[in-house]
Length: 435
Image (cartoon, rainbow, N blue to C red):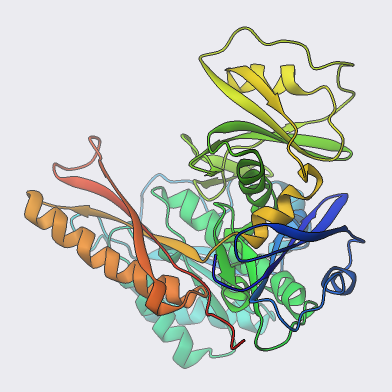
């Protein structure tokens, strides 16, 4: 938190709330609002806060209205991999149009080129899509998590030959698997139009930063959301989880977020949604670790909470959002936890708004690489740290406050000797206002 007041808005399904916090994180005022952008911003005067941060799930609600996307995969000919958009629901896939192809390209983990990039073929494919009035392109190359050169060369070609098109490169979103990266890139391209409308409807004074909560509980600028809306698919849940942890004083818990007509639950560690242990899906579309693991609870709940004696480990349960239904037994059973205490914190109705107001700019970069020894690993981590610091300034942090927050290195035994998955996270604070 900086020294100025902040406004947070939680826009989740049937519950929309707003909170005004001071520099210490104390709730000064709050509102339950109508789910309309103008009404949300009218809740408090906007001439003095440092920022307005929105947490919403409306982007994930818009997957049935994706813009048409040209999907370009770069891979070695003859490889037995599923075609682009395999496994997507027909109702979502239909909106994307008919322009999906696989052309030669890609690298292996060691940096060896699998197939020469055919830029003429790329240009012909994109020209056909553009003639069909497609304005979004998603590019995914095999191995781009380690060597993104071919994706970058395609982007350079499109900037020169098709400057009116918007391009998403899969390596910018991260992910170990080809399908995860590709699906995330396609969703990102398809959501840009919707994200642009969302940002345009939320007008704040120029000196007030407009931010959005991402699926991991960080915040990014409005302009970053325009480019990469897919990072905020679970922003509403992430803000509720953050707010529950802050309001209860427990940074490790089972959180139940009740937003009629249903509810959802998930685990919080270190005050944030727990990163997923397995690849996740959104509406049946596999997106890897792009979203946290969240369980949906629907139907008529039991009349009382009941006790839960079994479970692999004990946690407090924090209930936020609307009035508490009897969902504890179902949630604890499905997560395999033993509930030690049930907490309904003060201001539970506005947990998402509190989580939004206290979210700070943050982002991460990741890379697959082969290193030989500790010195090469340290060099690779240092280079990614520099990249993360530059990136966090681009999501809305004051560069003077940018810091590397965490580094995770994971040896990958199923890949060549020395293969490492490196993830570096950086964060910072928004610019201090002039007052």
